[in-house]
Image (cartoon, rainbow, N blue to C red):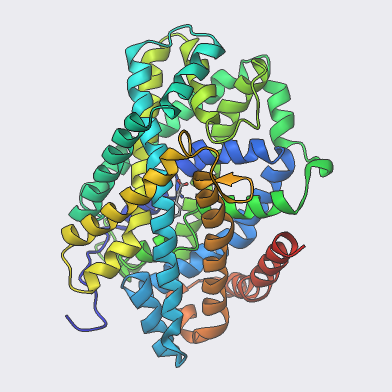
Length: 462
Ligand code: PHE
């Protein structure tokens, strides 16, 4: 294998890439993490800043990741090395790819634990044991899961094996068909749950909480959390989107005319980001009315999804069926994300000459071990803090989302904006509207680094 060509496949159509990237972006980050982080950070102010971060930081960086990925055509580490060579700068830039692979490995370890909860809840809902349950019974179900490391380990293992099985088969086999059906279904169920939320007595309070900007709740911590959530939710900063971008062909055959047409990165990215944001907001609208109607605690933390929605579902007609389907779809959304989280590390090992199966097994095994630390932090290790006030699970979540992903994103922005040859990145993006291109470039070169450095500085050193 020559050093510069990768042994990976390619998407079969533009929609295949959109579906895969949306599959990566939409996941537990939207349905589980967004509501819980928004709740902990006071709601409205957080949500607004999160939206601004998606628009002004996330979307420009996502365009850069896809463009870099497509030009490089390899795992993020080797793509960065190749492009650094083309730009005549130090090949140490490949470090951005290695940092990403490491970040992905850390994220996957706790993501898989939460994915395992979703798996367990399919069964809980389907069994009907929560039918017309009160909030105490619902909470007790979640607490008994957390108190049971054996059960969590089983679910974590199943989730991780499923992830690695998908990755081992190659990301575009099987995934495409699955995403095409399951994503719309997830959307539909979220809409149903959101409509149910609208009919709850706590709806207006929930809307105020989520959408009314309250300066008094606004601080450096929520700013950093909002930026971190934007990166986490859009799958940015660790090469997941870069790796998927590498499987995007330059031109694609148009179904109707049969001609080869170029794929527009900008419009593709806009579709993915819009679907991602809408899913997060829908989850909020489904969850918070239940919180306020039943005097639950919005600052509940990582368990928020698993105590609010089961409670709503338990008291809804056909709740067991809808609930089981809902968690099945959450599980699926989680899987289509988790495979993209593992892909940069696996693709890199494959380029080192390993088979996909071997590479996925190695990464899977390492991740499994680290995940045990996360699941123990809900029980036997609950009082062991890694960072001040944060247990193992919370520390992993905090460091990866709030520091490692934004740092990776910052380096990617600097690379695409300042280091790469302008003609290269312009050719890759190939935007029809030159003014829009210039706008993107200015934002990426100046605004993104400046904002991010200010946000980091403000939080980490003050
Ligand atoms: N975006 C995914 C989600 O919202 C998580 C993810 C993070 C995926 C980082 C890839 C990279 O669930």
